[in-house]
Image (cartoon, rainbow, N blue to C red; front, top):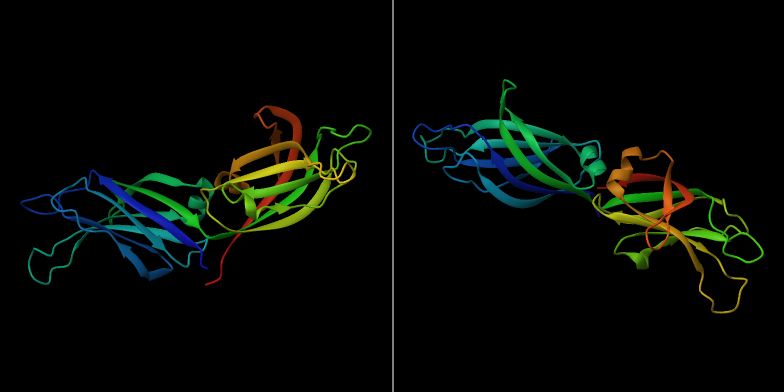
Length: 260
């Protein structure tokens, strides 16, 4: 499995006229700068300086340190034999910026060879097939759900829509401010997905068959949380109905590209 970049080339606006008697005939070429041979290309939209493509592509073997390049050209296939297509403008995007926005939706400024703006290009991007490691460090001020002692908490972590693939920490007995410090590998995820953490009270000492009690939870956009990747941060925990509690949980996130 390889880390990939999902790219939608939506439209461009305000591009210059390159042909003498008509508007431009425009297409876009996109690639990872490190891998120029793995490029993708839109269709040509004829005689239109505000073209709409709405085409979806996948760029493979992506690294988080990579830069995505978008090049816009005027198709000159109907001009003089042998004449090359005219370069109009270029825009660059860091893959790490796509990751931290979850879903990257931007109107990119295109610049020509001399650095002057020549219009805009609208794109949508997400990073797919990332290896995610969630380290659940600790929680603070959890509610006591046991009659004669503090709670016996553990945490469950899953990607929304993939509840059956959840990961679970150990139980810390009789502690409303537990420390786990457990790293949980979540498998392939995408930057636009949401992560949910449930904190539960282990009722193993109660009657047989009694389900564990829910204490609190939190759901958040993974891409936005990855702005502070590798650094621990606190999340406020909520009740099932979405009300804030006094409790917090400390986690950290790390991502890695899958090997080529």
